[in-house]
Length: 227
Image (cartoon, rainbow, N blue to C red; front, side):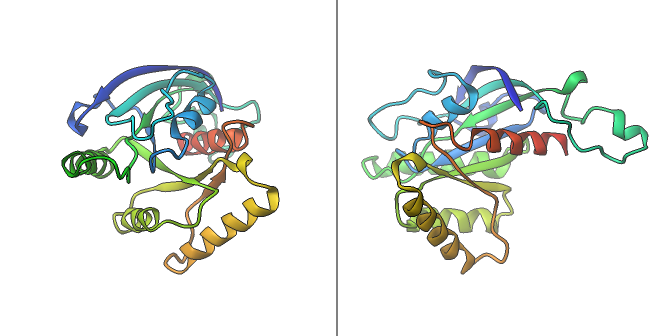
């Protein structure tokens, strides 16, 4: 997938304030200071699209960004080769493989310095979007690759599974570790998940600094849009 443009659209405090229509949405969430804004900027190629800050916990609304993209140059697999459907565009794509979708930046969770009332409000906002937003095709859960598995993340992953939410794990800040330490941390994390999951969700390893994982993430979105 090749991103042609990405523009800010709206910030919403409740799911019912989010954009109307049926455009597919891909949401990004993670603990505060996981590198979410940097990852969004890296994926879209827009350095100032999502506002980054040295102070964690700045995202307190549901932020929608309109993305326009085209399919990658390599040919997509044919759907029903020899049939009419093989030559028709995907229902989520226009002629020529063009696609429009929303990238959604959700508030981070687990920021200890927030007051109880604000934490509860953000919890309602996040769960309301995830459980009620039918346009959401996939939730990308960001995990800092440098750290041991955190209970708050594991509990959130378990909640996603219990509610049947389609999600993928995105390990961030891969450039901050040696290759050996990175591989060991990822293996440890996945082993922890295997204690509860028969089949692990898809996972990606990324770095906003080196752009590692950009192509894989965009290809995965492209695959979902083409299905």
